[in-house]
Amino acid sequence: MKLEDEIKQKSFANPYLRMVVNVMFTGNWLQKALSCQLKQYGVSLQQHNVLMILRGQYPNPATLGLIQERMLDRESNATRLVDKLLEKDLVTRCQCAGNRRKVDILITEKGLDLLKQTDGIMSDLEEKYRHITPSEATLVGELMDKIRDCR
Image 1: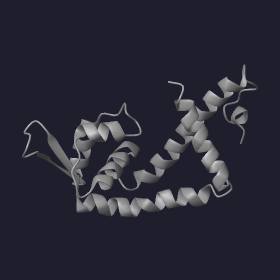
Image 2: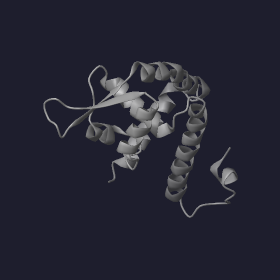
Image 3: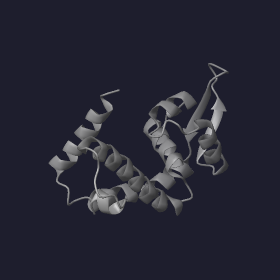
Image 4: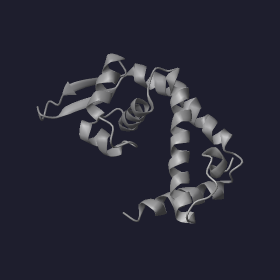
């Protein structure tokens, strides 16, 4: 469905404004869809992102700083997210032996098992968007990169 129909707006002042609104709307739409699917596993989108980062580091631990810099939503409170994951036994946290001010965070077997279950969600996304060709998907990614290049 066209953006104009989705948000009940007849037109935009220019194509750049339409692009910005479309990127924001589509990003929110994708996040909501993923959040709904993750809800059945008892984790939020941000918690899932932390688990994915920790799985990428596994078997090595990660620091809060490393998690924060790799998160998709960098405005999220990494400490609070890790605390929630600790309560669910999906991660462990311990003081680094070499530097007592540093805290190491490691994904648990339970966390790895949860990610194995949620991996299907990402696979389903690939299937869901098969109407977009690989070259179109590459172009969308490159255009998103180009949008961020104007910082």
